[in-house]
Length: 252
Image (cartoon, rainbow, N blue to C red; front, side, top):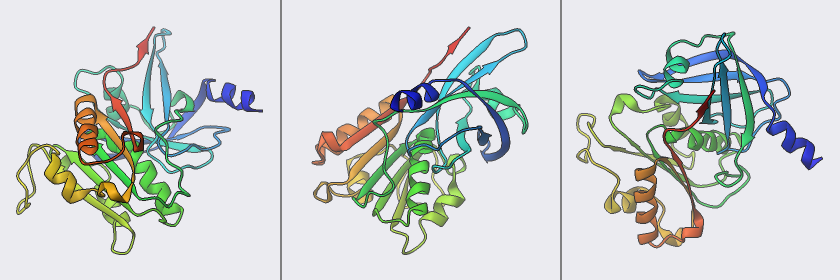
C-alpha cells in the first residue's frame, strides 16, 4: 500500500486550472483541480510541468499554499524577473488551462495541524506560501497551537494574503502576525525599514523557553541568517526547520 501511494505521488497527473486570484501586482494564486488528489500535509510542495505545442517542457517546484483538501490544491506564484515559467503562470495561464503536477512531495518541512505545541513561522518574501498553508490548516483545525508569524517583505504592497492574514489573526485567534519591511514602511510604522535582526526576533517571536516548533522559509540568505539568529537566541537547532528557494527546475 505504501509503495502504491509513493508511486502515485511520483506520477505526473493532469491538473486543470479552476480559478486564479491576484494577490499582489506580481503574485497570484492558482487553484488546480486534480482527479484523485488525496490532500497534502501543510508545508509540502508539488512539481509543475508545462508542455508546449512543440514538445518543449519545463518543470518547476512550488509550495502548496492551501490547507489540505481532497481534489484540489493552490499554489501561489511570485513572478521572477527574467524567469521562464513564473511570468507565464502569473500573467498568461487562464482558467480551464491544463498543466501536470507531481506530488505532494516533502516530508521534513511539514507541520501536523493537530499539534498544540507553540508554533513559530518566519517568512521571507514568497516564502510565505507554505507557512500560509500551515496557518490555514491551523485555523481549520480549531487553532489549538499558539502561533506567531513574522513576515519579512520589501514593502506593504508586496504582502501576499494581507487581508486573509488580518482575518486569521483576529483577537482571540491565538495567531499573532508581525511584519518586517525591508525597503519601505507604511506611514507611521514604528520601525525603520530593515532586515530581520535579533532585536526584532526578540520582540516578535516566541522566546526559546517556550520551545516552539520553528519553520523558516525564504531566499537562502534570509533563511540562513534567520536560523542563525534563532539558534543564537537559544532555540534548539533541531526545532528549526528550514526551506530555501531560488532558481530551480529543468527544461527539455
